[in-house]
Image 1 (cartoon, one colour):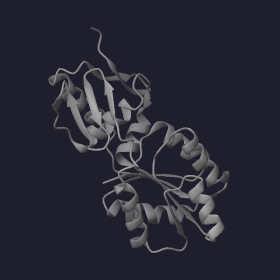
Image 2 (cartoon, one colour; image 1 turned 180 degrees about the horizontal axis):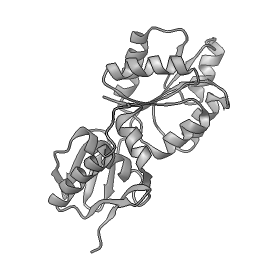
Image 3 (cartoon, helix red, strand yellow; image 1 turned 60 degrees about the vertical axis):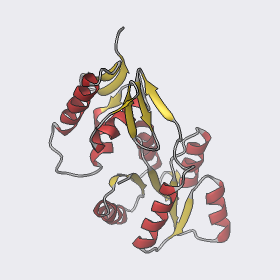
Length: 226
């Protein structure tokens, strides 16, 4: 299962694509504008972005270049009706990992998406540490004081999201969107339950950092006072 962001202004097309991807087991979020996409990319962690290059508020290549200029390595599959060789070269040169012209077959999109997710040099191949918590971004494994922890997939997702922004508040809405995408049947306290379980797991493992709730805002992870 991958966490995907679709950046596409055609609402019906985005809805259908998101539905197919969710049926394939992925968690999907959607943005119709570059400004919305930047919001999600700044606040959430995605495994890949499916990016339409023709957006109402600008050229998707501008968003793509800004991602790469700031060192964001998230894989990007560019979708566009502009499918000449010159335009494909321009998109790949701007930092796209692959390029798919419209119209396309969903099975081909799925195959291309899985291909870029499998590439060993796509992910941020390093560990993230907060206190004695270490997260392996490739294996998605959590260690506390050198010992591997058994966490649910959602607990790992929350922990990764917070560790990538350690010391900073991540909005509750961002956590919910990252966990559940656009699903409409999420219970009101689903995020709280997940965070509570994660906090208990870290405390039980004697972690020297933990997740803190910031009232009316969201959550952050930081080291505990010594």
